[in-house]
Every structure is written in C-alpha cells, then in structure tokens.
Length: 543
Image 1 (tube, one colour):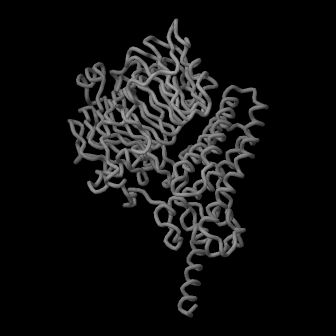
Image 2 (cartoon, one colour):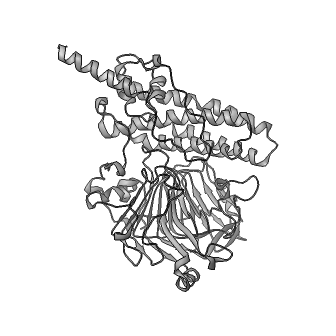
Image 3 (cartoon, helix red, strand yellow):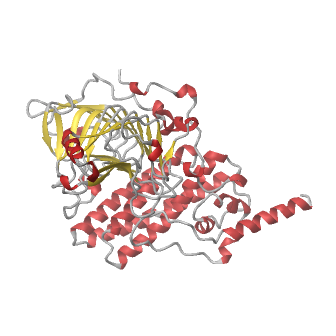
C-alpha cells in the first residue's frame, strides 16, 4: 500500500474514534421517566477492527455497537458482523423472558400480572421476528422485534414500583439499543450494499431521503386488491344449526400453522364476545354477511384494572395471513372510557375489506408488520388509527364522532397517531383515496360552533412518527394547520407528515403547519401499495 493510502486509512480511523463516544442527540423513547442509559464503554472498548468501526458508523448507538462486535476478527465480512449482532441480540431475549416469568410468579397485583403476561407475549413475538437471517428483506421483521421489545418496556413502565422492574427496564433498554443498531445496519445494507465505507446512520424523508419506489411494472389497480368474494367456508357460525355458536370457537377449531386459507362464515347476527387469534392460527379468513349485519362486539377498555390497551381489542390478531370482509367489529366502551380498541392486528399480511370498525379512542390498532384496509369504515374520536406497522388504508372512510359526554364543550381530535420509534423502521400509516369527515351528529355540532371543534390529520405518538395522505378528501372539520403536536416540540423535527393532492374544504395546503410537508410528485410512488407494503406480492384480488 502506498504511503498516501496509509495516511488516508489512519485519518479515517482517527475520525471514527473521535466521533464514537459522542452522545446521541435523541433517545428512542418518549416518556416521562427516561430508562437507565446504556453505560458508556471505557476507551479501550473503542479499539476494534476497522471493519467493525465502519459497520458501526451506520448505527445510532455506536459505543454499544463496537462493544457488541469487539471480538470480531480483523477480516470479518459484512455478513459476519450482521450475524454476530443478530446472535448477540437473540441471546439477550431469554434472560428477559426469565425475568418476566419471575415477576409473574411473584405478582399479587393485577396490573403487574398483566404487564408481565403481556411482556412474555411480546418477547415471544420478538424472538419469532428475529428468526430470519440478516438480509435487506429481513428489515421489517427485525424492526418489529424492536417494536415488541419496546412494547415490553412500555408494559413495565406503568408498574415500575420496584428495583426488579427498574432493572428489567434498564436491561430491555440496552437490548433495544442493540436491536436498533441491527436494523440500522440492515437499512445501510439495503441502501449502500456491502460497501461499509459509505454506511451512515438511517435517514428519513425529513433528511431528504426517499427509498426507491417499486418498479413501474409493479403498479397495479389498487381497487382490485382485497379479500376474494364467494370463497367457500370451512366452518360456519350462527346462533343455531351451524358448526359453531361463537366466533371464538371457530377460531379455536382452525388448524395450527395452516398454509391454506381456513374460511369461517359468520352469519348475520350480533356476537358479544372478545375474539383472540393466536399466532399459530395462520391464514384465517372471517367472512360475514355485510357491514351492520354480522356484528362482533365487545366493551373492554384500558380503565379496567389488569387491562392494557393491547388487551382491549374486540378482535385481536397475532397470526400472520389474517383476512376479513363484510362485517362490523365494535368496541362499545363509550366515549368516556379512554383506550378501547375494536380491531388490533400484530400479524403480517393482514387484509380487511369492506369491514366497519366502530369505537371512540384507539379504534384501529394497526400494531405491527404489513396491513391493508380497503373499502372500510373506521369511526372514532381521538387517535383512532394508530400503531407502528407498515399500513395502507385505501378507499376508506374515517368518521369523527362526538368525543365527550358533553361534546358541545368542544375537543381536539387527531385521526391518526403513528408510533415509529426508530428512523430505520420501514413503518408508517399511508392513506390513499380515503375520506375524512364527521358523523351527522358531529357535523351538526361543528356547524353550530366550529370554533371549539378541532380535527387534525394526526399527531406524533412516538419520535419518528410517519403518516402520509395521498389523494384524500378532507372535509371542512380538518383544521387549516392540518396536524397537531403531541406535547410541546416533541418529535416535530423528526416526524414525517405528508400530503399529496388532498381535496375538499379541509385541504388547505397553503396553511399547513411548518413541520408538515407536501410530498414531491417524484416521490409519491414510494407510498403505493406495491412500494410501501409490497402488496402486489401478497394481497389477493377481489375477483
């Protein structure tokens, strides 16, 4: 190697070492009480092979990255470093499981019991999503593992009354940092390939970066996507004369790990039950007799001791491949009961077609992975579409309802509250050809006193919240500023809230708040069904 080349290498290493200890400008949580920070490694921990230093340049938690990979050889390949990071991450989950089991066994408090139980579910899901080997295609799955680690951390946050829980949260926080580093490296691999000299921390639209859109030949008629009509049932549900009397019974009878659709026809009627679809009940399809005819209804809410938002869903899905059409799912807890979910999906490849979701706060919990909603109706009051999945709502009506027991006093309602915690997560809520309006009762009150009734397109639940409206019709109830802050200036510099060709009386592009954006035309295809959720590869055609 020539002398100038040697000097260049030494300079590069010096600059990397100089920047490694620098503190991060932001944390991955938004909370009142910050978790225990990752301990700062000693200076000796920065002594690592150049391959490690270059790979860690892609991460947000560089000292943790160098520490994780400190035993790597000087000739480690990109694949080796990714595999080592994944192995370290996987190895941290079993101790977290052991802690949750210990907490559960010792608990005599219903809220603590619920937190530990949910934590065990989330850690199991995280393990499942860390199964794929490192590759650009595993980014969403690994990002979902990060989501579920954060879910567990959040469950503990509300019962943090002992050193055991504090220690468990600190351990999870360190694990979250490693998971964040892993997905940052996967994002760099997807963007730059194996050339780690180009790797850098993840960027978002706010940094001027849009990933490539799907190829032009991937474009499809999005109206054609949905749940096929006329598919023959494997089981029926009704009050009498069918295979099952409840939807829950039919779900339990479905095969585990099914590779083919298992179709349940739920006949017209009202079914008062809470339905859980466990992760092993894959490819389950529920078909009703129409919105307002087949109705599944529950009333769980997060004000109930021992119940969290995650547990309130009238229909809650963990399994991949779930689909439903032609029915209503409702949570009737009411406008004064706070979080009360009608439908929650945590599984991949979720499709709802011509389904009505009725609730107030937190109606639709688009929790994780990829989801598609078409020709649906979703009603609520505040944050009634929320979660941290990669979700597209298409040709769907979003209807604002009166919020309070005395709604004439007015309110501030946000339609969406997207929960992305990390800039490398390829998640967000995209609304395409949807309509935002108020119910007849809400519109009557709005027109009597529009100055006290305020509707916004969304607010940032988490630091990297991303929501995009494409070609949507916005009624007069949408405030000219468009978007609502969560708390002070939280997330206002890191979120991405975009619109493209909004229409209607609420589409006041020139009056939008300064931290929102109009999507450039050359990048709008990034938010197509094919690009954002790869829907052309897995969503069926209606006919």
